Image (cartoon, helix red, strand yellow):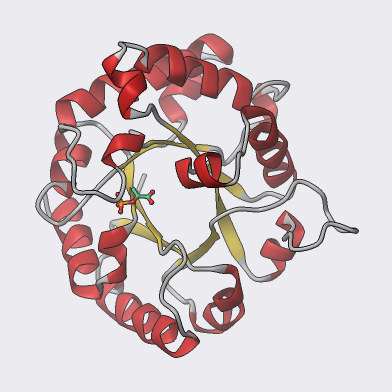
Amino acid sequence: MKTLIVANWKMNPSSLAEANRLFGLVEKGSKKIKKAEVVVCPPFPYLLSMKYQASSIKLGAQDCFWEEKGAFTGEVSPLMLKNLRCNYVIIGHSERRNYFGETDGVINKKIKSALQAKLSPIFCIGETWQERNKGKTRQVLKSQIEKGLSGIKENEVNGLILAYEPVWAIGNGKICSFKEAQVMGFYSREIIARLFSSLLAKKIPVLYGGSVNSKNARDYVREGGFDGLLVGGASLNDQEFIEILRSVVNA
Ligand code: PEP
C-alpha cells in the first residue's frame, strides 16, 4: 500500500491564481515520488480548476453535507464532489467540530453519505489538551469512533480512512511525539477491531496529523506505524510539502 499524504489547505490560499500555482508546483514536485499517494484538499471554489489539472495528484474536499441535493443553502453534497473528480473527503476535522459545532451525530451522517457516494472519508478523531490532561484521551477516541461509525456495517466501510489528530497539536507547532501518537493509532485500530473485525482493523489506513513537517514526518510513518499523514500548514509551502513526501518514501 502506498503511503497516503493528504494536504489540507484549509481556507487558503486567498486567490485562484495562487491556488493554481501551488497545485502546479506540488504536482510537478511529486511526480517522481511513486511510493506516495498524494491527495490535495483545496477549498471548494478551487476544485473545478484542479479537476482539469490533476494527473498524478488525487483530489479531496474538506467537508461535505449528507444529503444528495435540495434546499440546503451553502452546502455541497458528496455527489457534487464525485462530479469534480474528488476521491476523498475530510470529515469531522476538529476545526469543524470546534467552530461549526459539528457533533458526532452530524459526522456520522456525513460519513454514511460519503461512503454511499463511493468517496473515501478521512474521518478525523482526536482529544483536546484538557481531555488529554484529564487522562481522557482513550475515552474520547473510543466515543468519537463508535458514534462516528454507528449504524455502519463492515461491508459498507470500504474506503474509510481514520486520521488521529490530537487537537492540541494542530496548527501550532506543538509536537505529539511519534511514540505517544503510535499508542493512540494502535488504540484506534483496537476500537475498529471491536466494532467490526481484526481483519478490518489491520486493513484500514490510519493517518497522523498535527504540526507535521519535513523534520518529523518520517518518524510518524516509519517509527509510529502510521499509513500516512494529514498535513495542514506545511502543505501550503510546496518545497516543504515535497520534502515531507521525499522523507517519508525514501526512509
Ligand atoms: C490539519 O489541519 O489537519 C493539521 C494537521 O494542521 P497542521 O498540520 O497545520 O497542524
